[in-house]
Image (cartoon, rainbow, N blue to C red; front, side, top):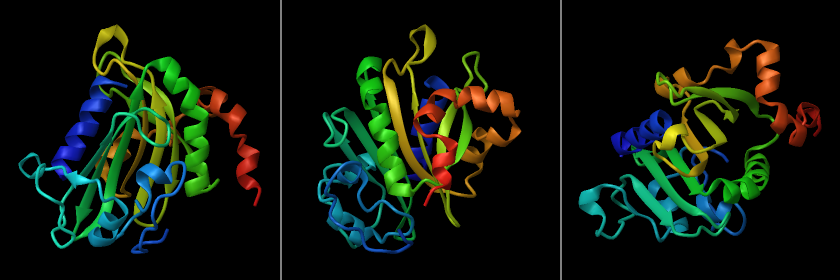
Length: 225
């Protein structure tokens, strides 16, 4: 599962653009309809109860019924998800029987993604709180099309949650759709850490990168209770 998830994220980056251990509740609305219960340390058996339609992500196990007593990577996919109404795939990774990472990716035509962008970010802020870091991430790193994009980043003791959107890759390279990403990784994940460069940007460049999002999520708002 780890290789499957990370290779998928690496391909996307290169070519494209709660409480630990708390039992999840049944997803009821918004973002929770897709990733309800996906918090660091949730036991596999509890997570499966909240996601009865999930399948094993291992190609050799796709047709096998998920057994709560046999932890492994899980996969969920939607032609039209119940949150944004877009094509969506979610990969969940478990280590020692507990959730430690996931990547949810929505995709669609740029116009369709633009209509849902603010709804997505507001749902993420509602789920994770106003105390997010305004990060910058290298997209398509080490390629001729590398660029910086603004990324919402929440950091806890063990994990890091990211939320961002990206337009199709230039020049017709895949993916040819705009995407929305909501993900969680271990805080000490060196690959993800290498992509986050917000602390190295000057104030002017950082402000320009976040200009549009700051208009919707003013920095002063994060200071309010």
